[in-house]
Image (cartoon, rainbow, N blue to C red; front, side):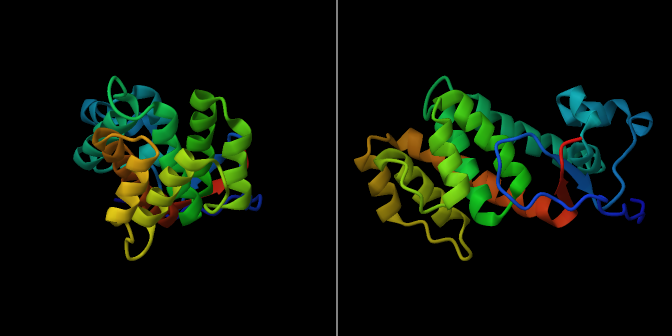
Length: 200
């Protein structure tokens, strides 16, 4: 891997949580599209991701990226059973809001709004933070996601009971755990290798 360091964006990075589309710049050199092999494209899963600095950096280790992307896709797109997509995205948004990952919060809050049609409540989470009152069901999902993302993790049987009390099945609780835990990890990765930038 090249040790070339990319200079930070000239414009000051966004410091406000938003549902708007924003950019991201890597601090290490991503692979250029001309450098990508068939194995790299296989690992990207979606070839369009070759244009993303984030995925073009992660594809330097194609085996890990492929496993990461297939896990991500299964958590968020495999919604035939279990938790509705909107609430999987809510879990990811809550983890990202707690961890301060502006880019991840922007992406997943947009999806949460799109699938729930509750844009004002999603924005309230971004504006007020993880203690915002979003109603019993969403409050329970956010609280569980935050507990999973805390250092050290604070998720307990009480969080699972609270989720059951607002109507979630064991399978749906598992989806909350997967969405929050995956993004707790993804936030920390993204925050350690680059920074958000204004939309290009």
